[in-house]
Length: 510
Ligand code: 6YU
Image (tube, rainbow, N blue to C red; front, side, top):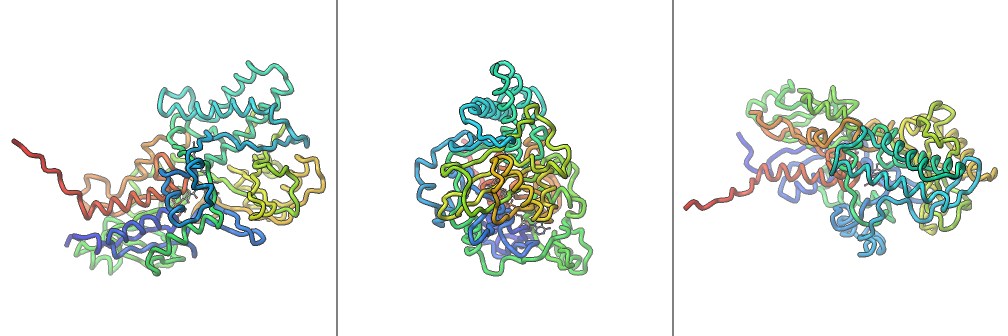
């Protein structure tokens, strides 16, 4: 018996991050009555997670609305729910295009405890930003001259600095600055090294206009508002999914009887042994989890081309270390404090001795503003394997190492943070990292492959049994909250149009 209406279709959404919530919201608005979300953990929001530090709000996961302007669905929702400051919603803010430049008010500290002049470093920042922009242009224009963003930027940065800068002292410090900016870029892209990021595919990511903004009450407020619009019991929490049996592969009694009637092509099996039957599953779990668990997650297993794309795409780690201080040691108007290791003028490999040198990967601290809301809190950014290693250390050791770092770079031996909170995304068993990047050898085709529903087109089996959403499945907004939300809506739309096909256009033949 075929289902004629979406209202009767059983849809299971795996994962209660913003993509899963967005999919559920849309399906329910379109009359789907049998929608459930299965979530591994005890909370909704996934990589949107607001935490606390001494009563102040800190974002453990996503921080900003990237490109808060009308094209951004997260911005539109946040405005609708009245979650933003007036300034963020202003026309002026929405039209700003900073082109990726570091904020105006940056402080630059060196490993010998000196404060560096912005004028000395400005040429390096300018060259770096130009090269970053060039790296993005290969996607639209010519063939890239080399395979990775890192190799291209390093080669060009050295060429330009050797040609343009004659003063050896200034040249060395500017080259060290390139190293810092590359580390920062590792965080932005969510990778260990920019040598792993594909040069030709780099420009696939699309920035939206608008000056990035934050949620004064925490990013999770957005999740709370969205969840309030869903039926109360829609989410089954604490139920990690072990395997999705599709094409009627599951052998349980229940499955066999109902599959005879052709009613439930999919059975979702949880780690605790519970099973749930469905006509459609929307899988929103992070790429990091898929990489680790693909072998057991689907039965029959993923088609080869989908599996290869999952393996090829990158999923790296970017973590934050929040530090609270009694009093600020930074200038009042400082927005970012960059750290420059003076010995890193020749682009050394990220870190050779992890145990003693992991901290060298921490590129900068952002200052949480406004002071009336946060007090005196810095957020340190660290990406890659060093970041993953940091997660394994006891909190006291991280505190000790970061304190030493700050004392060294400021030349002030008395600096002592009061409290520390850090994120540990790599060791989160249901995320396994932070977000997606286009690894060397990847192309948009890999994201298309990942997104393709199961069974594949052309199969005679029931269509749209397993659909794929989540940030990793958005071709231009991967790695972001708005990208994730759009993919949830996209897969909901796929089901909506499956049950309500658009009327065929009638062409008049004379
Ligand atoms: C953004 C930002 N941001 C910082 C940090 C992180 C991320 N992002 P979810 O993971 O949310 O949900 C899946 C659920 O599935 C989850 O609840 C699991 O528990 C569950 N699950 C897993 N396995 C399961 C199982 N077996 N059974 C059942 N359930 C299971 N994005 O817009 N602004 O400032 C940041 C940042 C530290 C970790 C971010 C940011 C990324 C977003 O957080 C993320 O994309 C979405 O929340 C994902 O939602 P989802 O629903 O897909 O998955 C050129 C170029 C470069 C490209 N990059 C440029 C942009 C830079 C991105 N910037 C990031 C920066 C920060 C600081």
